[in-house]
Image 1 (cartoon, rainbow, N blue to C red):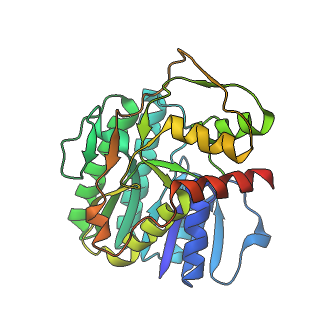
Image 2 (image 1 turned 30 degrees about the vertical axis):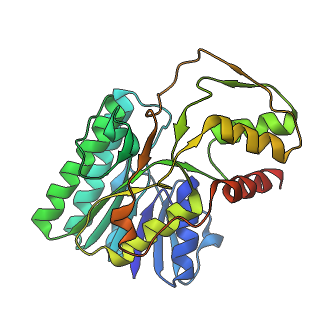
Length: 294
């Protein structure tokens, strides 16, 4: 299969690309930093970003992808209206271009935050409750992308990611931050010690995306998560224990984009394709910590 990927050099994208390569697909990857030496027989890179489609659309047309995986979303953690609208417009332009050149399958990533403040097991048929510009833009991309796909007889799959973690996650995220504190024997500042989230390891996420690429024919919305809750306190204990350090933390009033209260993914829909998370929180943290030490 010939597959075009945006965000292929990012945190999740690197694992998706590794999985796609192992399946012997032909890949075209959009990247800002082009290194010709990275090109191979079945993997090509094209320089550019979503802000200037004209810079690389001829290469995309020449490649003629059967499918596209859209992972890119610039500027995170900037959730402002300006950045969200910019990304929405770039993404819609991409979907329209893919439709025009005959791409028959598009997968794009959303977020659990589209569910708003709902808690408990979150299923794909629940009402969506965007609560800021970022979640509104993601929801708009899903709706408008789906409509473009219907008009062109394209399969459009929307993937709602829960709390993805693993090697390469941005440093200010919870788990990399706690690993840093454990390595340096520093006291961690925790805003909500008893919060529980659905943490899913990045390799499992990559497997899920590739499963949907290969097996999902009609498109639709799919959750990707572990399907269970893990508390922040548990994460702290496991990370500090791995360094044989006494767990040290204090609560802080620092404000951030709030996590959903005790919300976890209903993954029964994607499980029908034979996917399930393989890496539990203990193994996932171990692999993440080991990567941080290299």
